[in-house]
Length: 272
Ligand SMILES: Nc1ncnc2c1ncn2[C@@H]1O[C@H](COP(=O)(O)OP(=O)(O)OP(=O)(O)O)[C@@H](O)[C@H]1O
Image (cartoon, rainbow, N blue to C red):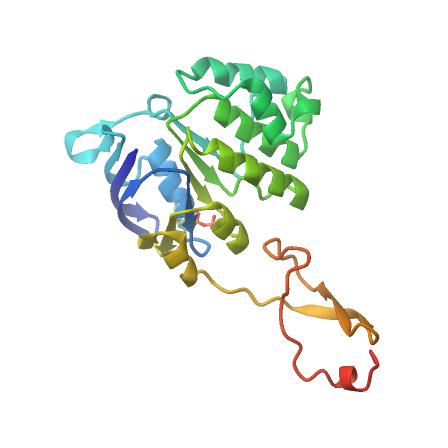
């Protein structure tokens, strides 16, 4: 399924000019520093941003062509979108939200039970939407977007509110679900992007910097340097325990995170 866009315009002082032809399959990562226009691009593709001029075409269908005065509204684009702070229909339960989405689906529906298990929302089904925590709401928002069976799904930091275990579980499920619904996935986490996404789009300020297979483009992602304190040293096994001094969700338990320089206290066999 081909997604093409050629969009340009201003958002206040911010200048945007991005062009790309993307063969959508699986999960495409959209990566770049804060403020370069990732959300702006996804909102434009979904039809939620009328400020940018230009052309968007998905699977042979023109969604926007400013020269010809074409701008399909979001509900006619069949594009799903999950934001970091997605809202659910507040007057409905979780089940009600999912059933409503299912009614919009035309084909390729994933069985409800599979979505419930994949998103880990079995215990939430009869809860009113406003009673959910941020992480629960996020899981339901992903489930709802999948139930609507969009042509493509745009995910803007969808796992940001989730704990490590839920994130791992959902990443596995999204990976499995990406066959019928190709996805574009924004994340600030380097490890999440590298493990989940292929190909990758790298954005610079208001523009596309690179597009290509994760093997190649992934080399350009920033290498993170973690600051950690030594909280334990066992002289018998010479094993160090480090505690990260900052939140670094992309670093996983058991991962080698760095090198201790000048470990004077190591030589003396003491942690003083
Ligand atoms: N409605 C608006 N009016 C003026 N400027 C805007 C508007 N929306 C976005 N911008 C500006 O456009 C730029 C891109 O914003 P955008 O949210 O798309 O970036 P981003 O790459 O998604 O950032 P982040 O990773 O922090 O979410 C920013 O400089 C932002 O201030």
